[in-house]
Every structure is written in C-alpha cells, then in structure tokens.
Image (cartoon, rainbow, N blue to C red; front, side, top):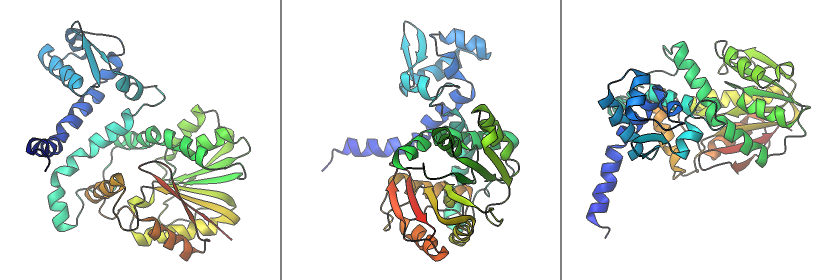
Length: 329
C-alpha cells in the first residue's frame, strides 16, 4: 500500500492547486515578469508598482516557491520558464492565455451547482468585454503558435492553394501555413468583432495581400466556396453535436472535389478513458458554456461521413490535440 502521507499529500495538492494559479494570475496582471528580466529587490518592485513592500515581498517569495522566480542575495529574477513564457514579446509568450484563464476562474466556484442543474455559470461569450475578448483571441494566438508549427511538421500542405480558417480568431494557423507555403492564400471566417484582431496579426506578419476576411456566424452562415483546404481548429468543443454535424456539412459544400477538411480539437478516445487533458477540458466547457463538450474521434468520424467525406484518418498532434482529416470525393 502506498504510504498514507503520500496519499494525503496528493489530495492536499489537488485541493490547494487554485492558490498556485491565483499567484500566477496576480503576477501576470501586474506585469511582474517583465520587471524581473533583470534582478530586483522587493523594494525595487514595490516602488515601480506602488505596492506596499511587505505584500510585494510575499508575492515574490510565492513565485520563488512556484519555481517561476529565483532569488539570490536578496534580489529576484525570472527563472527560465518565466522568462521564456511570461514576458511579452518572447516567442513562447503565454500571458494572454493565462489572462483568459484568469477571467474564467470565478466560474469554477459554482461547479457543483452547474453539475446539479446542467445550466452553465455563464453562456459562451456572454457580456464579454472588449478587453476580455482581446485576451481570449490573443490567448488563442499564444497557444496556437506551437500547434501550428507541429501541424506543419505532421502534414504536407504544399498541394493546397486556397484555405479557409473557420473561426480562425487571430489567424495564427493560417499565418503559419502561408509563411511556409508562398503559393497559398487564406480566408479567415469569424465574427465581425474578432476580425480586426485577426487583421492586426496578419498585417504584423506582412501577409495582408494574401488574406481575405469573411464575417459571419459559423453555426449558421454559409462559409463560401472554392476552397481546397478547410481548417476547423479548436471549434467543435464549444458546440453540441447537432451544430457540429451541421458545420461539417457546410464545410463539405464549401470544398472543391478532392479538397481536405482538418478538424483539430481535444479529441478523446472512443471509450473516453483519455487523454486526461481532454476529459478535464469537457468540464471547462460545462461551467462556461453548457452546450460544449469534448468529443471522441469516432463521433467526429460519424459527422464527417454523414456529410459525405471519405473515411478519415487520425493524427496525434500532441498530448492535448489530435487531428481528424477527411477528404471530399
């Protein structure tokens, strides 16, 4: 039998995990990690932030405990993970997605009520402020950069010339694909309030002449036509089976014969025994959405086959994400 102290310690770590995340959220919001790219005392940091020295020292020591910050001779400085991932402008910056998660954290306090009623704490996108929307969309860019590069390594996209990025948000995947394939052009389909953020990202990448933008609601609107590649990335978990089934049908109609649909999401095993991230993410959808869920690759295969696609194939992209790829005959 496992040592009882180990077992109780595991439960305690689960029960207090929210404390660690709140420390991270507070430091990220205060831009602590930018300040700590060079060593500073707690007094230095307090002066910049106009915080009490005592509370500043407590937060910095907490970050040391989380191994995000290192301390030597009374000075604090970013550990490698914070320097790489939590300083704006760094290639692996994750601050926007951390801010988005922070914005949704209060919803978890009513998980028990949501489980009992089936009613989400807040509908998807309800009363989302412009700042919260921007954090969400740029957060998608934070996590999309690595996934987009992984997709390029896993797939040969050279045959394609006209891509549609459905619910493309900041356009991260399309931008990455077009940078690798100069003959490709892309259209980003998303809500009108999202497209200006996508346009910013595209223009910053120097690709404005190769992009077009189509405003609309991906749950009901026609997607256009003439595409030979359609990407539906991290979309289906926000919606129920009927809306996803309908979306697969509209994607089918928008593709040319021989065109390819790529569905990227947190797909589960058919028996829903894993991956762990996907199973936990379903609960994130429950508290913030109500309609959404994570789906097995068998369910996605059923939707695409009903739409008319040939039998697809599954690719494990990462421990979190999988691709379902189907071709229009």
